[in-house]
Image (tube, rainbow, N blue to C red; front, side, top):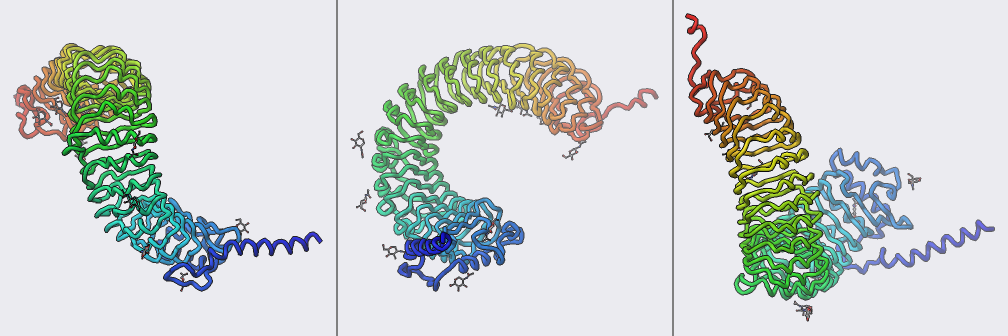
Length: 606
Ligand SMILES: *[C@@H]1O[C@H](CO)[C@@H](O)[C@H](O)[C@H]1NC(C)=O
Ligand SMILES: *[C@@H]1O[C@H](CO)[C@@H](O)[C@H](O)[C@H]1NC(C)=O
Ligand SMILES: *[C@@H]1O[C@H](CO)[C@@H](O)[C@H](O)[C@H]1NC(C)=O
Ligand SMILES: *[C@@H]1O[C@H](CO)[C@@H](O)[C@H](O)[C@H]1NC(C)=O
Ligand SMILES: *[C@@H]1O[C@H](CO)[C@@H](O)[C@H](O)[C@H]1NC(C)=O
Ligand SMILES: *[C@@H]1O[C@H](CO)[C@@H](O)[C@H](O)[C@H]1NC(C)=O
Ligand SMILES: *[C@@H]1O[C@H](CO)[C@@H](O)[C@H](O)[C@H]1NC(C)=O
Ligand SMILES: *[C@@H]1O[C@H](CO)[C@@H](O)[C@H](O)[C@H]1NC(C)=O
Ligand SMILES: *[C@@H]1O[C@H](CO)[C@@H](O)[C@H](O)[C@H]1NC(C)=O
């Protein structure tokens, strides 16, 4: 009895569902090129098997469970609707398939979602895909597709998500797609080779657009003013193109939900013939959700307005490097309390770094290099607990590197080269995460031995081109992980100690242009990673140690302009060096062309 009722109810449910779906599945109202007579799950299966057949052998084994004998709804990557009437999703993201994107897929007319991203699909995007009229999402990102973006995609009127990023597509952006697919919310054509203009009326048609990504193409012309009609736009990324014109002040002021505004590496100019940034920044203050602003690499002229702090509480990164921004850094910038990245490098900034900069408590990257900043490094920087990279190189900063920086336990890179710094606090030796320390080309006269206590430094220590006077500190030998040590062009004197072999990770050591004397320790040949050893322009003497030839990794050896004597060893790596490694040592001899031949012992005996 119960069973009978069930049987009666089931078909009713089915009919009900069919009624719901029928108009969508079987309507012939859609203005379509291909009139499939009653496309069914069998049509879908045939299409998928035909798609599989076009793939390489490897790919076919990835799709091994796509068998004529199995149910298509059980194929890997295939999702059917509840009734198993049609295939509604094909999801093969990063599945390793390789072959053409075959037009057979166009027979899957029930598809809502087609995701073949991050594979090795080759060939053209088949225009036939325009028959997938129910598609909401088309994702072909990260393949090797070339040729034009077919106009026929403009037939996908329900499309919300369109991602063609990272292929080899050429031609222009078809305006028909952006004008007809009015449901589009996500559009990504980045990292292709598209040229021409961004279709100017884009904004008049795509009122639902939230994400527009067109970066790394060859697009030119202006950013369409119509974008100001995309009032819910959140991401606008057009970096690395050839777009020109004044910064889109009007447009951004009408995009209150904008989160990412990425315009770097185009040909935009600021107002008043590239001299005035104020109107643009004022307009940006209407974008109260702004998280990132990138305007780098355009030679933009103007000053940073003092109202920069009105860019909003969500602002996390500012990239303004490689421009022609002049004047001083406005102290109000420290009110942007959520900043994690501030990059103002390679501009024409002058004046002092604001004393209050330490209030930017969330900063991780502070990059102000290659400007004309003067004065001291503000001690308050030592309060920026999360700081990871501090780059103040190529400015005119003076005084001592403040001890407060020693509080920066996460600091990995400290770049202070090419300034007028006269000292460095021993506290810097407490920055236990430091991997790169560059204080070269300054006016340091001494170096606290604590700096060599950075025993976990991973990458390099560069103190070259200073006025450092003193012996090489023995602590140096405890730097077991540093790869490059450059102490060249200073006034280091005394000898090179054998314990230097403790710098076991060293691949580059440069002690040239100092006043070092005594013998070169043969133990250096035990440095298994050493590729380059330059001790030229010192006063080293004695015989060239045979042990050095044991360093199998050594590619460059420079012992020039010292006072070594005796024969150049002939063993190991020494066979590979030319006279250029031994210039200006009048008392050496050897069998290398260009070096005086040693007098044979036999002759002495005769
Ligand atoms: C695709 O559909 C067309 C029209 O229904 C049909 O002629 C063709 O055989 C189908 N191809 C495949 C591979 O399913
Ligand atoms: C699909 O696969 C599942 C488990 O792999 C199996 O139980 C089921 O019978 C299959 N369905 C069809 C219709 O083949
Ligand atoms: C786009 O839609 C317009 C009508 O709004 C129509 O005239 C045009 O043919 C469509 N273009 C394409 C390529 O579908
Ligand atoms: C916004 O859209 C309307 C209607 O399509 C259009 O008239 C207007 O010019 C557009 N605004 C801009 C700035 O293009
Ligand atoms: C920008 O915001 C100000 C108020 O902060 C408002 O007066 C102005 O109309 C806004 N601009 C636009 C274009 O919406
Ligand atoms: C300092 O040395 C490091 C490591 O060898 C190097 O990468 C860097 O460019 C040097 N700095 C300057 C200013 O030459
Ligand atoms: C070592 O430093 C000197 C001066 O600083 C420089 O001229 C030379 O090229 C450097 N040697 C190597 C191998 O980099
Ligand atoms: C000398 O250099 C060559 C290549 O530059 C290298 O293959 C060879 O192993 C080196 N000689 C020795 C003794 O390591
Ligand atoms: C060693 O340094 C001298 C002086 O700078 C230079 O002329 C010579 O070419 C260098 N030798 C090698 C092998 O780099």
